[in-house]
Each structure stands twice: as C-alpha cells, then as structure tokens.
Length: 141
Image (cartoon, rainbow, N blue to C red):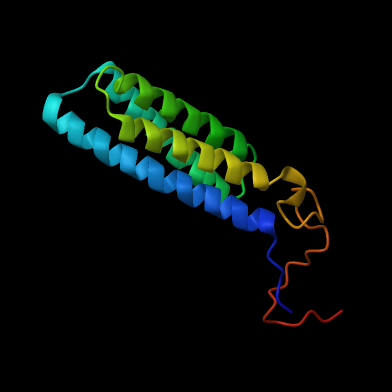
C-alpha cells in the first residue's frame, strides 16, 4: 500500500529546494565577487548566511528538528545582507529578487506546519507503529 503524501511534506521539500537554489546562487555570486575584488565584511557575511541557508535546506530534506526556524532566519539574514550590499548602487532587480525569495521561502515553510509534517498522525514524532520490517517483506506475526 502506498503511503499518502501530505501537503505539508510537499511544502517542506519545496521550501528546502527554494532555499537550496537561492543559497547556491548566492554562493556563486559571492565566490565570483571574491575572485574579482577580494574579501570584505559584507562578502564574508553573504558567504556565511548562504552556507547557513544551505544547511537549513538540508535540514528540511532530512526533516530535522528546528529546520523551519533555521531556514527562515537564514533567508532573512541573507536578504538583509543583500539589501545592505546593494545600498546606494540602485540595483533594484537584486533587491526585488531577494525580497521575493525570502517571501516565497517563508510562505512555503509556513504551509509545512508542525502538526502536519507527517500527515498529522504523530505531530513530528516517530511513528509508534513502525515495526522495522521493510514493506517488500511481509511481517509474519
């Protein structure tokens, strides 16, 4: 019998995918800037927040505790770092995409509510009915 997939699980994976894509783009841009102009405080902060965002994305894929908190805080921090770094340059496209990605990650992460992470059966705890027998082999009792 197939296991039903809940909207919360789909939202969890989608939030992780969005965050991972944004983290990889930010890391790529930061490494390109690093080779072009050298290290500065904002560049180091962008690399650190991008790594934290990638960590939050990996936590969401593994359904680890606090993944939602790490994901939203890292996305907010990366948005702030990017807004500060383009201050005075007039790069409205980077500002718009940064805010749009933060809003998208926050909204999708909000859909994956704690009580629905596994269909609402166990509210995030391991399934007590799990017997340890793979579904390919029937359990003989």
